[in-house]
Every structure is written in structure tokens, then in C-alpha cells.
Length: 151
Image 1 (cartoon, rainbow, N blue to C red):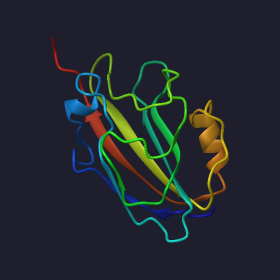
Image 2 (cartoon, rainbow, N blue to C red; image 1 turned 90 degrees about the horizontal axis):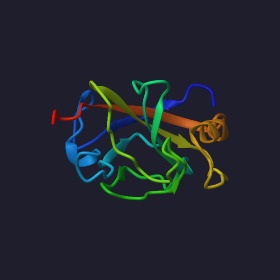
Image 3 (cartoon, helix red, strand yellow; image 1 turned 60 degrees about the vertical axis):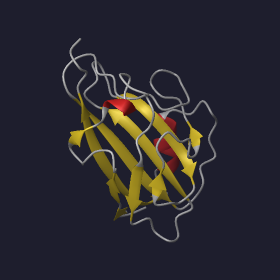
Image 4 (cartoon, one colour; image 1 turned 135 degrees about the vertical axis):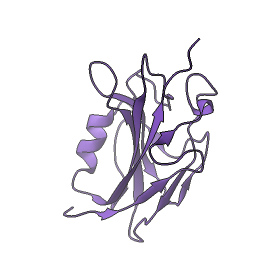
């Protein structure tokens, strides 16, 4: 779709550009944080959420790929809101921040689509991005930071 509308993405757990609390990481309960989505168009049929870390060594690390989320304003903490695709660990689940060194940026990218996606459970971020390419009505992102505690 040409010129998707903006979505405002936020979390009650951390500010945009702020630190992600440890409970949502490998050093805590490794559960997804709550995400608030404002501006979902009325004609949306589904939402896609992709969480990735472009600061990972080698290449971007995909932490969470979810599609066919029912259009809604909130993705609840520790939830499974839609169909989970394969992350960089090969798991169909959320994998929290766990940077090997330094502070990394984690992008929670949210897309409102004009359709449901027909994908296999083996779909990864590339397959999801390809499938949604011409169906994005709106999108937005939230960025969180995380650095492991020194042991």
C-alpha cells in the first residue's frame, strides 16, 4: 500500500528509547512486555508484530514474529496474541533481549494490515515481510534498550 498511516506504539513498561525492564529479558522472566497500539485503522483485518535487534553481532536477531493478531489497542504482557513465526533461535515464541555485550536496541515494529496472512508455522521474518508487503495500512515502532547486568 502507498503511504501507510502512522501508528503510535508505546508500553507501560518502558518509554520509547528507554531501558526494557529485566523481567522481559533473559535475565528475568523472559516474557513479552505489554504493547499499546494507537491509531489502528477501522478497516484493519490483522496486526503483525516484529521484534528485532539490529545491533546483534553478524546480522539482525529476530526475537518475536507474530501475525494474524486481532486488531486491538493492547498486546498484553506474557501473551500469545496471534500466530508465532520462527525467531532467530528457531523457536515459535518470544525470546527476550539477551545481548552478548554492550547496550542493544530492540525494535517492536507493528503493522496494521488489510488482510489475514496465510503462512506456515515455519515462516520467519523474511516470509512475513514478503507476505504483508502490499497490505500495510499503518505502521509504527517502539524502541527499547537493554544491557545485561554485570555478574
